[in-house]
Image (cartoon, rainbow, N blue to C red; front, side):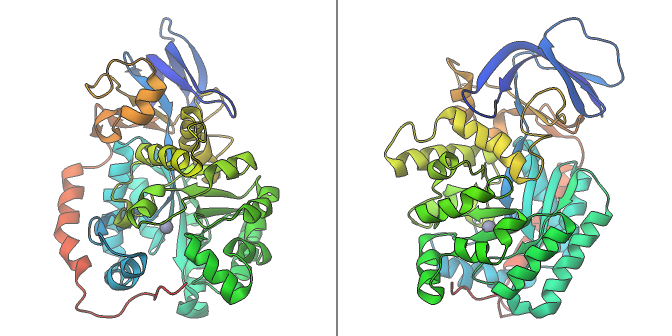
Length: 446
Ligand SMILES: [Zn+2]
């Protein structure tokens, strides 16, 4: 259902720098999926499409999940209170032996439903059977940038299959579905493969999306084995130059930030501290240092096997809290910084920095209406603070518009039967956790 007007809402104004502000009693006018005007509430103009009543609601730019493994919602809560090593080697990688295209499709639908209902209008994904994720995203009407993932342990064929999966996504020719190159990480993919991947990305005009310096132990191990940090590996293999989404980067050093800065126009970092706090890892992503160096930071949830939710608003809250605590400075990440990370930052990492991430004329109409009238938000002295620190996305996101199309209305998913998604997921949940087949898709030894 195409929307032509969101009437009489408040609007979260997110500039590229400086304070985020709220303008009250605004109409957002939309044509062909594009915002054409944001103006004081007036008489509705004539045109094609529906009018959405925004009375009492705050319109915010659609949030972007800038690093996730969406089908891993199927492993939610299945690897708790374990070390990182056991999380990979005893739980997740042995369970991922059970992945099939059909199971990935079911998981991706569940993930897309959760994200849309939480105000996430686009996600930057990194996983296997990527064509199935793309189809699920199309079915539910969410944007996606999907990186088909491979390990060097699967040989040249594994790499070629991932490249073929990129071609398959591009062949969908859907402006809402994009592709990136997805080597798993700098510790599971050889430098030769990273170089080939960076060259391929440059040839296709696409980005690379991979895990780099996920934690400081990986950085220490890399320096011991290779004499260089994971960021230096990404640099000398051409990955940073190709343009890259770096997942996590908790092990990025101050010297690494200086290496990243010259690539800031095309390479950024997705931060999602919740999983790292759960794994008792210290430090988290050096968000303040990256922002000061001009490097884009987005909010990501990682997979729900470690983060438990795909809630980007929650990830923004964690980024603010973890950064303040890490820097011992209340101003290390302000509300404006956190709101910009989840909106403009994520949009930039998804390759849509000039067309998404703010509610401004000329940008695509990815709009989320949030209801801040709940008991946990009242009284609303500062809607920006209520949004970041009091709101709960799953209960407070009221309406979601993607590319001018209404996909969630009054907390209800319009594009797919949610009950069917839930029962499909429940039906295969135990099969995915079955370890009787034996083996693992990879071994964690960074
Ligand atoms: Zn990840």
